[in-house]
Length: 356
Ligand SMILES: *Cc1c(COP(=O)(O)O)cnc(C)c1O
Image (cartoon, rainbow, N blue to C red; front, side):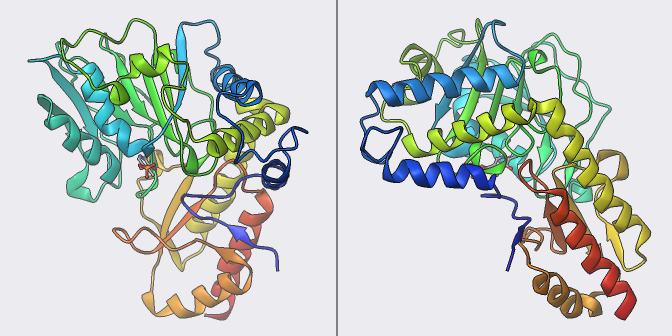
């Protein structure tokens, strides 16, 4: 039976990427070797790394604009630590916007390095909205925000104008919508939400941002080391980088971010229209802040839970349960999820209304 994978991450990737990645496990680019056994220093893999770094910048519209792209390890969570290590000055301070569990995880790490100002938080309302009126201290070394809050289903539509560098965790909406990415000084994203399998993190860094802290930074945590070594400071996650490259190539062939954005808008509109129309459901996030990647919703009446769960499971829908901290349902509609899968889910919601 065809599965409709709404998992929040690791998540659905294009079928063609699975096929190409599988073929490369047996015979990578006609080398007669598996992608899993080739040297990361071989010219074939160096070419993969170079193309992946260049294509990431190209898709973001950052080619030739003074940015470096890296494929690192440790997940987005590692960047929670690496960002303050590399950007917060000794005796400096950093500003953070608290929009959820991941943002507060980043704040926690920053606190170990120095004064960490939380400019606003929606925690008191269980992160159901994005705070908008806040002031960023102009003497902070950087401002950190989370563009899409995977767990709560909220997404930032506006980013503050500020004279200090902006750092953004885009783990769950990178490559899903057009933004002026040149407004950001550092962007990071764990691959497993919209770019590839778990195991690598894309980090995009603007030139001139680093080497100003007065801190001594261990090599493995030092972005400059990774830039100097062209993302090969140590053995990179070869298979995760290769599979991410395949996904980026797929996206480029589709027409890039502007093309996928139209699909993503159509999928989100279809699902949210049903959440709003169907009297048995309600959305959890503030309407103006709803995420086009992760839609969170609840049943009006918990008594319908078993019936609804059976309906969507029977339809082949998978990965719909909400995060354990929120409950309810979460439909993650990343780039590779087809519109057809959202249609199947909406049909199950209508069926519930009909029979409940
Ligand atoms: C999943 C997620 C993370 C954590 O990613 P790991 O790769 O598991 O460390 C951080 N930020 C956001 C927005 C996420 O969605």
